[in-house]
Image (cartoon, rainbow, N blue to C red; front, side):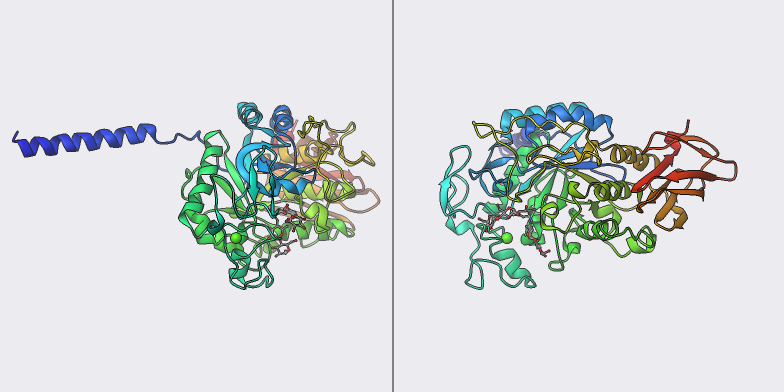
Length: 476
Ligand code: ARE
Ligand code: CA
């Protein structure tokens, strides 16, 4: 080999080696299972990391595939739940727990097959002028040590900091939501910082993210952050209202269906006008099923009157069952604590951390009144747990055999399941035609036997504000 050639060969070998070592040093991410229409998730609103770790075996037994954790990063000090939506650094330390507890939660949940999704605040930092965060980070509104300086924040084109015109996408995305310091996600270094935060969580074993206030980040900029994460990472964006349209975000994310929250509030919150709402033509008007996470409520709608809550227990219960019953979307259930003050967070210990969450006794819609701070544990309500099994048994089977009688409304899911709801104040005794094979089934709601005759009919007694549900997997 001549000298120059040898040099080239050596250079090539070095490049190959460098490429090799780059691959071996490249960040390794644990594999994640993206959510499907068969998965069921639950928002464990404001549950501490230790509490979720302890609850994961129950979540797994009940059929939950993933749990959504409230924003885990360092926040401003205080006892309101919404402090957690004001980041001051990306250290994992807040009243929900520290990084060690966060990692232990992921390990405990993953071990039983429950994946962890994390609520991440990427649009903004705090709205406080200055202060010290939960873990001691000193900040001013536009200066966060080691993360961001003043020019990393948007300056609102209107000259007024806050969003004023909610129909103007530029304002929505470049001005301040609720006076929160708006990150300039148009800047590469800002996007890289945010991607680094997500990559860190993903490497710890987190499977996906709820992107808080996603509509306030330009879709093209959010995409550039998301593109820095492995492709098996799930993203669910919070995009409410008309502008920008949810469809801007479909190419790289799921969205939450706020239309579904409204619909559940309308049909179960009033006198239960189910007719026409469990209907394929209605679903066809909503966001695409495969891109949509359906929910009855979240932490905002539970407080602002737009969603059903545990305080309307029988309605919340049936709406959750209904969300699991229909062939639309990827359902997320909701679990939280009782409150009378909408600002109040869960009870904190003297060290600022939350003590372990314990579910109330007699968990379920008939529990009665709650003291502030008690853990309602809607995720354990028997009808909800029963309908998770139904949801998994029927898969994507289509509607069949619609039944309507007074306040009763039912439908089949092909030959795989049948469910009948009663949103009236008296029980309904009915003979309902199904496409189910003849046999004896266990009702997923009450646990009683339901017999399907050779002609597919079943005689049922549907209790007031309850349901009867059978599926191929509940056949005796
Ligand atoms: C708190 C105080 C404020 C104060 C602010 C800054 O309450 O008075 O100005 O701090 O100091 C949560 C709480 C807020 C809280 C905030 C920060 O709800 O009260 O502010 O945390 O601590 C819009 C957004 C949507 C957003 C809702 C609330 O588009 O993204 O408003 N939802 C998420 C979270 C919230 C969270 C934040 C964002 C902020 O889920 O929990 O706020 O991180 C129409 C519009 C929607 C609009 C909706 C409001 O539908 O189309 O765009 O949603 O109305 O109902
Ligand atoms: Ca923004």
